[in-house]
Image (cartoon, rainbow, N blue to C red):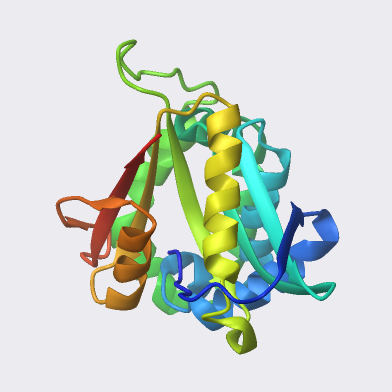
Length: 219
């Protein structure tokens, strides 16, 4: 989930992530967000996963640069429902094939997948055109999925610049609320998002019973 930076001191510029940026994003993901089932599935799966943010109509994928060099990235969506629907319609089979290949060579992951994710995954695969079941009166909600920054540039304002850039894009698209999740024990990230105005919510647990702290920002 998103990592934290603190003081703003570097001159940071943002640009849209391109396909050739994906391997660097995967490397940073592994370095900064090393735990999680997606990481365990390997770099090929992570590359497929990150490409969904480049092709989704609701996807946002940003690269931060300092002195012309890549300093970090952010991926998210301006409408979480639309993005998930895009993934299920267009990318689910590629993700499934890549994930299955990883499971075959990692037998220890098969039991974990069967225990925590198989039922939900198979249900999703059966619905090739999932409908948006969001109530009409519910606000349009975007999702900040991942932020990672090069180690040498942490506390240089890169993370804050990425998050604020994402917020600006969300506002342009009429998003009313943003969400994100931090690890329960990642107090630095939680302090970082509080300083940027995000509000913590009730702790939730994922499929692996790992606790996460949701944060919300009303725009």
